[in-house]
Length: 151
Length: 105
Image (tube, rainbow over all chains, first blue to last red; front, side):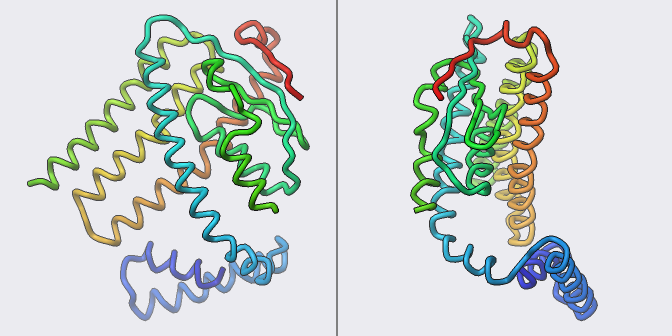
């Protein structure tokens, strides 16, 4: 995390000079220490999550493709004359960890045409612009991929 | 020259997406549906305009910064959309009249 923060700092600074480097090391170190003592950050968990990097990148690629597809569908709906029939679906997911639940909820919200209204424990409520977007929502590609990552 | 043409194509796509967003915003009469229209520009709109600017400028530094803009946009937007919708469902008495509710639990 220290290195990631330092790289981010150098990217924002735009050039690698001595003053940038010293200030960057100082600030990244302070933030890492703060997260370690007050926000429950541990380097072990961070490196463990790095092992899933391949799966996460695959997930990101699928997410981008879904966003493009959903955008085209919503643009078509907006330029049509009649108003779409929206609906709200309640369902339960099989996911266990909070991080994956939030990840899937955010992915659903990020794809236009659907967004998560309620996420409480296992319960999801998803609102769709057109009822057809909500078909098969509880076994869509995001749930399949995260369930595979959970093992 | 080719770079300019490709960049302007992406820029036009982004503008079209934002235009559609505004049209949808005024076409739909209800908050829960307007949120969907607003979600267009946050994703494809900002992405295509970032790609256009990245092609036009072309330095690695600028490309990384534009990538960060898109990533932060993608991280923060769903949270806000979710909060807005959640408040609407909880506070608006007649919210249920505007959509069908379905229970698959």
